[in-house]
Length: 157
Image (cartoon, rainbow, N blue to C red; front, side, top):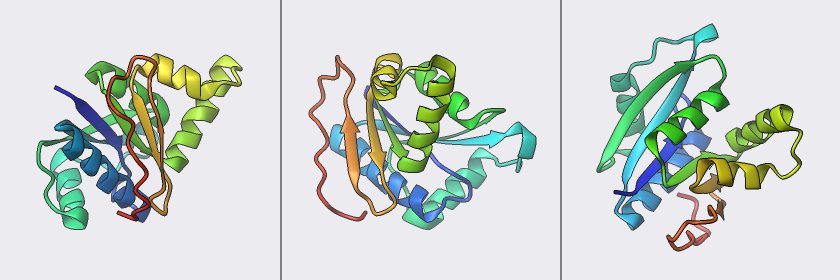
């Protein structure tokens, strides 16, 4: 079964809502399960539960079929997201452009590698879809991704 993972803030920001909508669209288009992930940092834990996350998401965008809600606690949000994506064996990650930028900076500090996008695609072995605040979509597929690229429909969902 295909799996789409979408990390979001809690409560979902307007950018998170845009990213969630795109992730739900991608999951539906591919007949995939969707994992909605929130990382609750240890250093400023808000005590967010799965039911809190589910309620907040459904309040903002409605019920999502085949969705699973996950809250992880960690020191570094970006690292915790990467760990979850790898552990779940995600096929697609839909991430907001701000979070994608943070991933790039974190990996760059660790590796001093200028080709961060290739590293992420290689390490994650999945398609990474970046959604900007206006709903613009960029899709970067993994080398062995057989799924067709996700078109940018220009929509602001």
